[in-house]
Amino acid sequence: MESCQEGVVLAVKAFPGAKRNAIREENDFLKVYVTQIPEKGKANEAIRKQIAKFLNLRTSQVELLHGETSSQKKFLLRQVSIEEVLTKIVHETRRLE
View 1 (cartoon, one colour):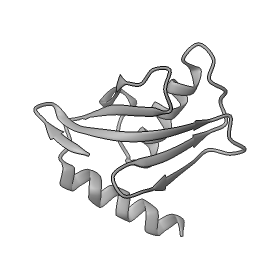
View 2 (spheres, one colour; view 1 turned 45 degrees about the vertical axis):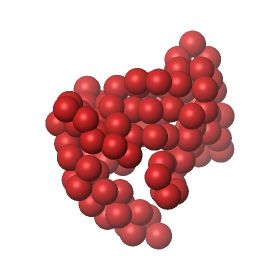
View 3 (spheres, rainbow, N blue to C red; view 1 turned 120 degrees about the horizontal axis):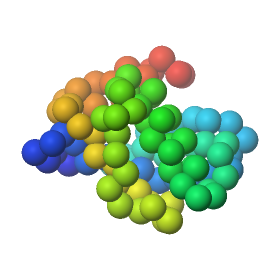
């Protein structure tokens, strides 16, 4: 995760075609599992929506920057700070335990 002028760049490892939607925290990135198969960008859109929901952001605040066809992706989270994102990740992770 790194700060930028527009917000935060978040590294994600994508797992499309999973049995259920889920997000798990790893050291420097999130593992995002979605049931949507990787077809014509549908899994990327499902991942974007899952991240927005997990971090309590609007979907318009989450934009795929890199990794359209890769499992390693980077998303721009607009109008938030690293501190806000970290707080939300910790809060959500504890809530899901």
